[in-house]
Image 1: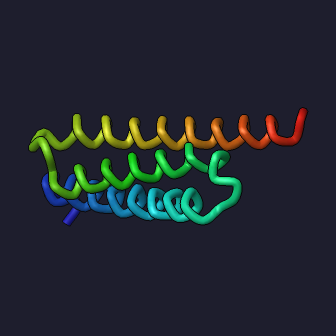
Image 2 (image 1 turned 60 degrees about the horizontal axis):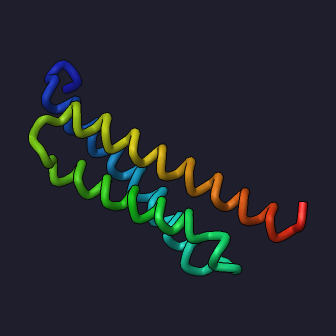
Length: 97
């Protein structure tokens, strides 16, 4: 089955979309229900970006799959990193370090 390049590309894209959607849903959940909210706003935004990127991968928009896949995964990782940095920064600022 993996000799068929189109099937392998679709299966790989599906796995990445599921992983991004799961991570995005976790970040959205944490952003909505963790206190104080100002610390977790970065995770909320990162989760929404990851969910949007997962939806784009599933919708296969635009049709040029490899470029879209690389861009969405890169954007999702970037958003996740910024969200983590925001959480760390806000947590340290509230501790008075």
